[in-house]
Length: 493
Image 1 (cartoon, rainbow, N blue to C red):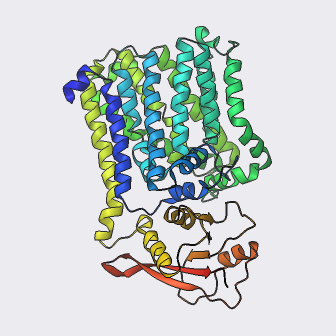
Image 2 (cartoon, rainbow, N blue to C red):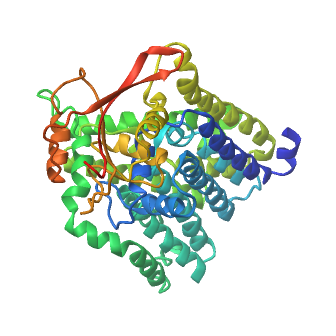
Image 3 (spheres, helix red, strand yellow):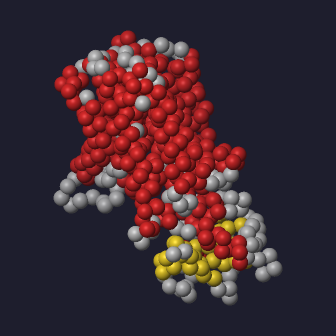
């Protein structure tokens, strides 16, 4: 393998593809209970909408299409996510190939993407919209750099398509193309690309893709932004520290945490050439460096403008994904023998991603052996089997939270599941299953969230008591269980 990478750096593309295939296999071997983002996508995949609340619709459209073709399951959820991650790495490598002088530099850049925490850890744990936006950033870099190097109708069109996909994947994607334009303004030879008439083709492509959601957004701006703004202000202002300083410190801390693994891997492999690499520069390192700085400054202005005090690392994913390409181009400009370092670089990256994958899998597989159960161990399949054995399959399911809805959607893929945040249809087919997780003791009053939900659907259950099921996490550990409450309304009731 080492000799193969040294001779043929393109083999890195196959290794990356194999890694994401392994990620799909490992996810299928884990328990079939879903994480938060997974369950949200499973639930919302029932609908094709121009807007899905606080998140843009692109990932939801892809998941809906895949569910329509192959049904909704852990497999289709995992295949979509890892396919987008692979395409992200693929176009990232192709973007680097546009401007690299060393044939091994694109492989270094692409493998560098796998050192980013949102890719090797957070995405495999539970991300969705960010994954689609990472793909859009890579596609944009490919089109953007190709336009700078050899402009054509195709390069402008690809760039415009990437921008359109990006803005309907994650709203903060807008920062990337704005930073790209700012980055090339000082370059006299490249600045004219902005004023080439073919840029109208890019603008038109982006507008066509984004227009339906943009129309929805204009009429639902609060619905789309309130949750994110609330999360950015978690903890609230401090009496002793100005809000803008809290936001700046949080942004700086999140940025350092996000870039640390990538910087560490590059430093470990190229430590003998660090001084040369730091001093080396080219037209492309200048552009990418300015893009990184512009992204940080633009985000900082947003943080200060909205009074944010809490910035999460994953929110910076679309910005820090520029870093591996920048570092790879610094190495490329230094004249370092990249092809000789590639096998060692690949080995370190492989160790990093495989350890992360083992840790995530161990949480779900090893945890129960130690008596620890998490969300991914919730026995929804056993609950579904118990319902079918006792009552048969429902025609409609109502539940009060998205996580339960998404999980039951994968257990009953042919049944429409309704929950807050989805579409409420006027017709409620029977038999009807109304289910929720029990937090307190059996026999408690109907929880307010359940009563409110049923009232909105004009469902009266006076005189009908809920039924309860205690489902063990494991057949060998009956003491630890999950409690479900439900109503079963048959056609003859």
